Image (cartoon, rainbow, N blue to C red; front, side):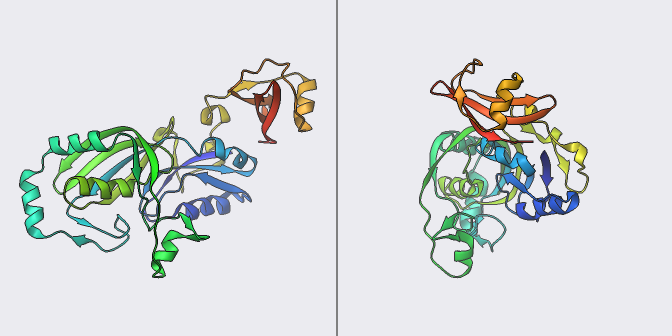
Length: 288
């Protein structure tokens, strides 16, 4: 089963899915795309055999609305650590000279397309088998390499100094907190996130989501809703038997190369398959 939940402020992604585990008595559960405790918004959760399909949605584009405050920086690039404010003279000069047009030009010029960023040291990235944020809080020095990300769209929502609110659609692995820091630097100031909300995961938007306290087993999302790009097929019994047995066999059922197919037997999904080298191969079996 898949659920789309609204993660509230102050709750970690792990705590959010632990709540569902306890509420529904679920043994196996996972999610796609961690949200920081201070972030809110969409968290896609998979349970039981549906967890086998997480990798096929985990790389999805995600959209965020976030507010950057431009008068100071923090070690974590958000409000999880103390703010070191800029000199008053720098802030007051920016108050009179920084315009909406300058910010618009900056984000469209430097924060669109493929760019490089350095993730925050206060992150869940593993270094030497440890989470980076654990190492930092233990007083260890952390160095995280640059990585390439992609920003598919960027839009200035509002600006009232010292805060600017932006909406961005980004690739997997993007740290919005790093973008906030970098925007501050490009403007000759310092930036940190004061609000971060995920409002879309690929094609899934907030109209489909439920609050954790309100969600029921009736609020599951169907596979065709989660994976609209996968064709659904219901092959004959002979083919179903091969899939149930986990066999690789010749592509006699007309699968197209490069496409993935969800296989149904009656009302139940049984497999995710694809064609490779003229053969039908199982990506995941026993998926419901």
